[in-house]
Amino acid sequence: MTIHLPKVLDIQNKTVIVRVDFNVPLKKKAQGDSFDYVVADDQRIRSALETIFFLKEHNCKIILISHLGRPDGQVIKEFSLEPVAFYLKQNLGLEVEFAHDCIGAEVVEKAAALQKGEILLLENLRFHPEEEANDTAFASKMIKDTNAEVFINEAFSASHRAHASVVGLAKLLPSFAGFDLVAETKILGRILDKARHPFVVVLGGAKIDDKVSTVQNLSKLADLVLVGGGIANAFLKASNIEVHKSFMGKKAEENVKIAKAILDEHQTERTMINIAETGKSLPLPKITLPVDVLAAKNKDVNDEKEVIHLELLKNVKDSEHDLDLQYLDIGKKTINLYKYLLSQAKTIFFNGPVGVFENPLFAKGSREIAKSIASSTTESGTITVCGGGETNAVINACGLRDRFTHVSTAGGAALEFLGGEKLPGIAVLEK
Ligand code: ADP
Ligand code: MG
Image (cartoon, rainbow, N blue to C red; front, side, top):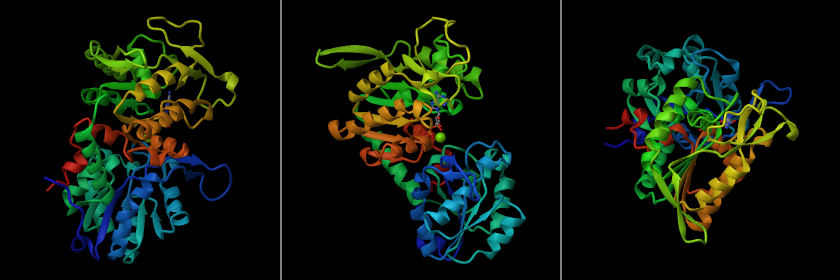
């Protein structure tokens, strides 16, 4: 069973609804103009362009739908896709209409007015709780209001979600895979087949609630999982290491429980790592945690004097340090340890910044890790793959884009794909 790109006859002159992933990092604009937020990294937008141009060329009316962030079923301006519509017009020269909702009167009106080759971007799908609930009535209404005749999934990075726009629409309309989605599955599939060992994963980021459990799948595939960023906090806490006010995700207690179970299960597994020039090997725990961190009272501090370097000692309840501290980057010992381990790898997957890289005071860990991985592509011929919205932003900011074997737009979806999971958004396209 395979997924198929649309043929010209499937889409020509039709109204096509395309699930894209325009969940791009935004930054607050310093001053003026009509929008408070601007696109900070456009990788995900660019990856959908081939499909969009294909549809334009064949006289389709194009309806683009996406989520952005996690507004949890509520209308929150910070998560509006309007800055993305603006970006498509200003920076990519695409004529795009924007509707301030993804269903309802404005959508009906603007979709009806759409001419062949024109594009209409709808507002954030997740402003409606029905999106994440995979509500069929919601998907039907979207089809009715937009007059969509064909569905294309061009959001590999959202395909691990059985949501209305990913799975629901695909069940109701003739459905195809976009160019980027097909390319991603091919490349990641090949990596999975060819992966050489040691296979080392660097896992960071903030989506603890999602990512904690993926460590379980990854550890079947990988020889070492180097944990950093927000997600490390759950694992540190599960190892009885104090994390103070560090970010723990919404389901903090549950995450620590899951982390503990994963650590326990892999407790006895050790990966032998060669120690440079000694000819000796050292056994390392499969799930490796930071040994030191940079901490501060909040992630927005802008003075280096407010940043504290902490060594993390097992079973030491830390009473000396300020109880308000948050761990915001990995420390220099951890950077060196992780860099060394990465230099031993033959395959590397990197998802999730290991610190709050948006603040230059906490960007060092992520930048050093990214640089180290990039250099092993060229120097040791290591297969290097990275993915994720913010991970892409780090890679682009460091100018390292061309120095990985593959840069995926996907974080969570790539993790699940590599972990051997069948993604619901892809399964539903298989014929
Ligand atoms: P990706 O998009 O690459 O998959 P995530 O969305 O999971 O990554 O997480 C990215 C975010 O994680 C970044 O915005 C970064 O600020 C945040 N982050 C990294 N380390 C920490 C930390 N120690 N505490 C809180 N947030 C963190
Ligand atoms: Mg992200």
